[in-house]
Length: 632
Image 1 (cartoon, rainbow, N blue to C red):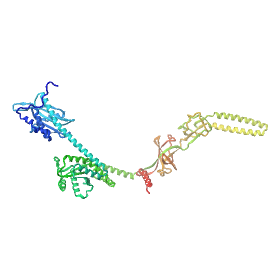
Image 2 (image 1 turned 90 degrees about the vertical axis):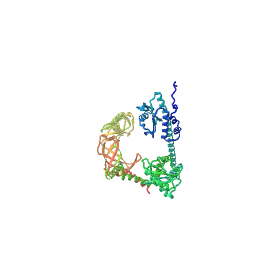
Image 3 (image 1 turned 45 degrees about the vertical axis):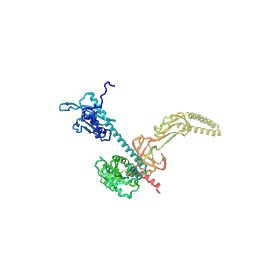
Image 4 (image 1 turned 180 degrees about the horizontal axis):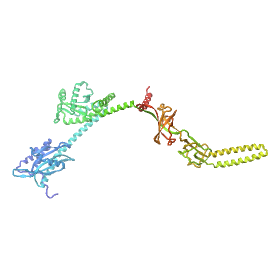
């Protein structure tokens, strides 16, 4: 705590000074308590501050009329305001720096014989990082402590205006919340009803109850005028057609001006044309009328809401604002329900009308250009022709597949060939172990020599019976020798022609036993292939023998090979869940890069047809089958 007490912020009562009476005037203080306008409040506050702070020559209060709005003077002292412009510099600086500011004024003649320099002091009204206004005074030159006291007195005095501004913000926020919450209640009520008629009648009745209106009418634009669609407390209103027409005319008048129209007009509402509303009010026996239009997101008028009640209860600005919020929220929802309740043919007609309006009306250059380009594209495809080709999955096969089998029961001795190897005619593929066969041949040869020697001895002895027996045994031995020689000659398996090995990897089975006639290798010739095409059953009827096409293999995508259809198999097969026919074709140009087993895509040329038919015939065929299956 400082040793020296802080100077009092209350002025000492000047003896015989008439300003004290102004300072203690209860009428000035009443403006700070009672309901008063901003001008009255700030004027009273400025007069009081000029009495509380000594040496005040002039003062001004500027307030913002809204967020990001410029400052506007609302009170000056003295009332003449001749020197208001001298506060501009200090006000701008205080608003920019958002704190109290003191600058020198440059000097002013206070009396006929005395010239005393003046100071300009200002303090902003701040709350929640928002500046509401600035209070500025021009005071006489004084010491540092006295200047600090004056600044603090001005700072404390701004609390009155800050409190008033905050109360106004709270009141406006409360009113906005009430309007929004009320609008949400109406939205919930409208969404509960599935049909437009029930939703519109319920909304009109709820709004009439909320605002104590005798009648609420809801209308929507149809053509160039508004048509009343719903009335409060009534589902049928045909018996009151004259009244309904008058209400619709009032809605037209409001929509034409694109603003709310109330009769009697509230204070400060601005000029508005209300001739039709006057006629409606007079025709109903002098009643208060309020019409609020509502629009879509593009600003196009959708309809309006008209409220009626006794003239003794005119519509207040707060009620009009509430109706505008409700109409802005509920109106588009009702319009959407009205649009969805239309018959399908009406929807189609409206959609067609919108498109034709864009096409033949003004504007929409991009839309029109796109339509012309689309029309030209359709015309082009209706006359342009292209190659109609049938695509099919394709597999390469050798024209001949030769099986290499084991000539006898034995064991694998050598196996130099593997699948994929290209071999020439006579090249070794594998060799069987022939050691047992050679031993057996040696044994058979020895037995043959023995029979030959015994036969000669029997011939020399003239033993006819023994000769016949030995002759048969000798022939049998010689036949066995020929068989063993043949088997030994076939122990080496060779390629029967220039070919590629398709299957048979025996390199990992050396020494393994094999049975006679077991397939060891499959080979196919290198210079003769056939192409197998799997054609969908819906397209096979377009194929004929001799038709030509192109083939592209998956492993050779950079090359295409001409093919010719040679055979169409008239039997369907199921491939990947689809019925397909097997079609065989031959290659018109051979290539050393082609191998059996390669797959690709083949396309057979049929004829020249319209591009439109080529791209749509599959869908048309499907529709034909679907219609045939369902039609009686």
